[in-house]
Length: 129
Picture 1 (cartoon, one colour):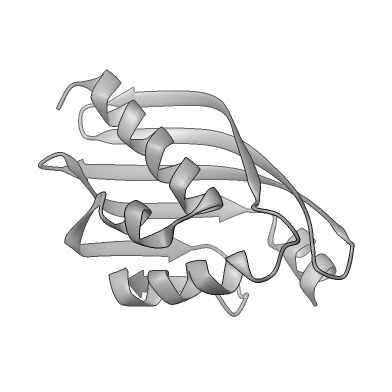
Picture 2 (cartoon, rainbow, N blue to C red):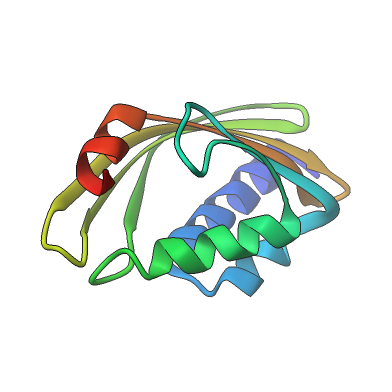
């Protein structure tokens, strides 16, 4: 795939990842997809495709409306796409959730093979802790 196609794949995944449905987001990944999240939160660590499906269902149930994820910038080279983004949402308890992210995608054969997520884990703990 071209760099532009890889960037579009990353953007589509992030839109589906935040808004749903989870199965459409996961359809864009390889069978051996791995998702890694920074920090020491309950969701931190490396997850396979089945675990990511569960994480997405839990995330959807934490907010009044779907998480709004805004892509700020891309950097892409070869089979990798880096995305800087920020999110906004209201939790079920009414708290504001406004986080910042760096996502690193690795593509293979037109699908997402690996995704690393870096975010403000302190903010997550403050809002949901």
